[in-house]
Each structure stands twice: as structure tokens, then as C-alpha cells.
Image (cartoon, rainbow, N blue to C red; front, top):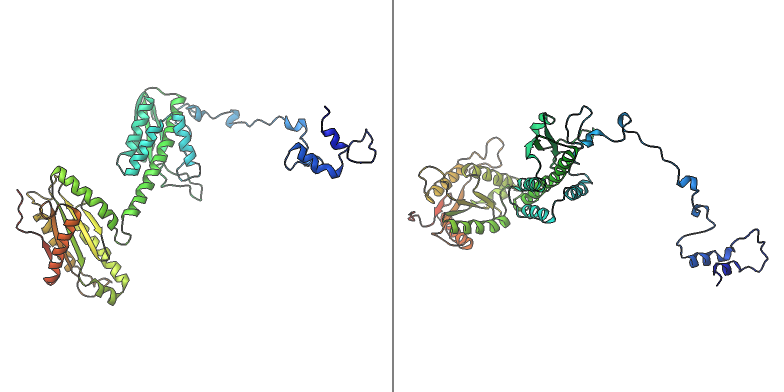
Length: 406
């Protein structure tokens, strides 16, 4: 059977010389459809194949530094022969960071389960993520040496002896407009009696992977702070308070320690807002939190649970606040010091937000004597707060003051 393309030529009634064959212009569309080549036009010079001499043209070879075809630093040694780690990892924040991290994990043959474990630790906010990642690297390669993460101050010894180093970037430094290179925040170091180009390149890949983890940890912590913190006061917000305090109470129930809750608000706060403006009210809230932090420990939970309503959770998890201290008596004494600090604070001097004095009123309740859950503890503390208001304000009331510890 003859090819169908011959019939495509036989469309014009005029006689065509066999020495000058051509396609009839009216059948160019039919030809393209039969050939099933999209947007192909046999009469268009741009659709013609390139000459063979263009396709197989020899490309000029690119010469490396000093006429070498590859850099010796990538091979694991500098031009002077001293051991180095090769190229530094891409600083997080660039477009290629995620790709570089994935490529590094694949090159290091880090198992998918190990990477999932690291992500789970970050998602749960657990400490020690970088050390866990470092242990994965140590177990995965069993290098002849100990891996360490050191501060950037160790840069001076980068090429000392057989110590290999590679920079770890957490995304806090980026390229400047003037072309300044980002500075690593830490160094991944390996002190080994022997090394090779393969080990140097693996260490560099390990630093790339650790850099992505460090940047992710920093970003996760930043987002968590935004989600858990009151923007105005810097204290924890109500959502975090309602989520975290039940966990503290459950831990106290298992380990048998006390937890006290102080609820307080600013007396006549609406009066200050109406007479001095909302900017003055914001300044009052920020300064009250500053005064409160001076009277509490770093592990006490301070939260803003309303407009001018605050909560402080004091947990004695085995460490005493001072020698021979007793809970909740010591907590009550601390709350009284805080109340006095607010009442005596010079709010109207040095451009202060208001003229006159300020005071707070609060109620204090303790687990396990006064209540067994957060809701009940808040109800008891709120009832004591109302008592403080009825007493003329500027007061802290302790629930069941006759309670004595055994």
C-alpha cells in the first residue's frame, strides 16, 4: 500500500514538474493535521532542523583557576594543602535553601523516620532539637571523631590541626546590599585523627542540613511566641493560659506540689482611659507587667486574660522561693509586695501617663486545698477578688488563710 502522503500532493489540477515538487498551499493545514505535529509549518524556515555542524559544534572548555578543571577546596584541601571543609552551605532564607536541605538529607542518607522525629520535636516545642539532629548524624556515619556544635567565636581555629569545620546558619544573617557574606551563627566541628575529601564533603552536607533545622527552629519559636503572647503587654495571652495551666495542675497532681493562682485587675481602669486616653491606658498595662516581673520568678506564668485583667500562676515544683518558705504564705507575701509597688509607683513623674496614684485588687487561690481544676481555681480566686473590691480596693485577699501545710 502506497503512503497516504502521496495523495496529499495530488490536490492541484495543474501539472507540476517532478523536478519542482511542492505542497499546495491550500493543503498545508491538512498536512499538519495528518502529521499530528502541533504548530508545525513545513514552509516556515524557523521549523527547519538545525544544520548538523551547529548541533555537533564543539563547545569551548572552561578553564578553572590556575588552569585546573576543578577546585581543590571541594576535594578537601586548600591551595596550600591545609584541610578545609569545602564550600559553605547556602544561608537559610535564600530560594534554594529548601532544595539544598533536601539534597543534603538525601546525600547523607538520613532516614525519613529520623527526619520526621525531628519535625515532631519542633512541632511540639521540645528542647534539644539541634542536639537530637547532631546525634542522628553521629550515629548515621560513625565518623572517626566527635561531632560538636560550637559558637561562631570558634572560627579562629577553623583550620587548626585535623579539625574540620563547616558553618551553620539559622537565617538571622542575610546577604547585605554591599555584598557582605552572611556570618554563621555556629560551627559544626569534627576533630579527627584522619580525614579525607569524602569526610570533608559529608561534613559540609551535614552543616547544610543542620542549617535548615536551625532556621526552622528559630522560625517555629518566633511563630509560637506570636501565637501565645499578648502583643501589648508582652505577657502570655488568654488562649495560652487556658491551654497551659491545666497541664501545670496535672503535673502538680502527679508530683504532689502546690500551685497558686492570683487574679487581679487595675482599680478604676476605665476612669484612666476616659480621662487620659487609651494611649495612657496602654502605657499603664505595660508598666504594671514590668512591675509584676520584678516580683516574680522567671518560671512563674504571667498572662493577660482580659482588658485590664491579669493572672499569675505560681508553681513550687520542688525548689523553694527562699529558705524556709511555705506555700501559699510566701506567694501571698509576694503578691502584697507587688500590690504595694503598684500603689507607690510614681505614675505622674517624668512624663508619666497619668496624674495621681494607681492601685490593683486581687484574689489568691491554691491547688489542691481550694480547688482541683483550673475552672474551679479561677472561680475561687475571682470570688476573693470581689471581696478585695468590696473592702475598698487596693487589696489582695487569700482564700482560706487558715490553711497550713503539713
